[in-house]
Amino acid sequence: MVTVLGWLAAVAIVVGLAMGFGMAPREVTQGNVQRIMYLHVPAVWVAYLAFTVGFVASVVYLARRREAADRLAHAACEVGTVFLGVNIATGAIWGKPTWGTWWTWDARLTSVAVVFVMFLAYLLLRQAVEDRERGARYAAVLGIVAALNIPLVHFSVYWWRTLHQPPSLLKPGASTMPPIILAALLVNFGALAILGAYFIARRARVLAGEAEAMA
Amino acid sequence: MPDNWGFVAAAYGLAAVVFGGYWRWLRGRERELAALRAGRTIRSHPPSRTAHPRPEPGSRAPLQ
Image (cartoon, rainbow over all chains, first blue to last red; front, side, top):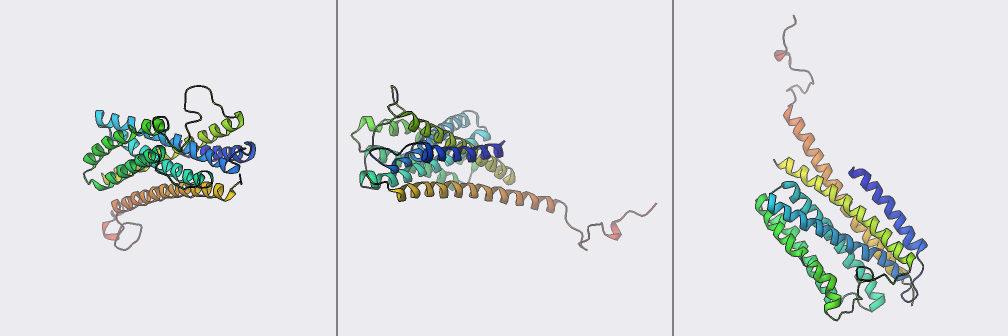
């Protein structure tokens, strides 16, 4: 099942690249650098989804103390951190030619950096606490608190004056994007979502194997 | 506006390195676990002192 998901992700990524570079047109105002958006935007959506999975699994772990829920939370938060790192790095690469700067401490960038650091702390906490059960409990609480910041990141562009543009899709009302650009964005989101699911499944399997080896 | 293809290549290249690196790290962990399991299987069946796969002569049951 995990292997099938991996091959599916590989095929979907190839289709996504073909859509982003072959079918989607050159954007009028930004030029071809806008094609970074087919990676930058889906990466943050997958990170949000992974952190949501981590949030639900952490709540389940605290309520039921099921080790499988803890392993899922660990895997989802780790994979979410990887995708959020890609989102931040590709945003900086896009920002330099478009805004003239790699980074600025505006509300969206600062809030997303805070969430990234919180999930790095989550992963460090997992390593730092020797007692496995206690570490899982602390990590679940931190995972829940960190995931609660995601709405803050999303709405920061409305609540404060920022350099970052407001969302083009995750907002009330119809999208103003040309259909082909929207299609390329959604196909790439699908591809990265399958890749994220594959990573989470594989990481959870490794964690189960490690728990078995330590027993 | 210029196309800035170098920035596009940098963004996609970086993503490829990060995702590829994570995939390789996961594969490495799986291989370590597989090696650990294999080691445990070997330890649970210790080899004979002569390193011969058959049981040592003294421990063999007499022929009927």
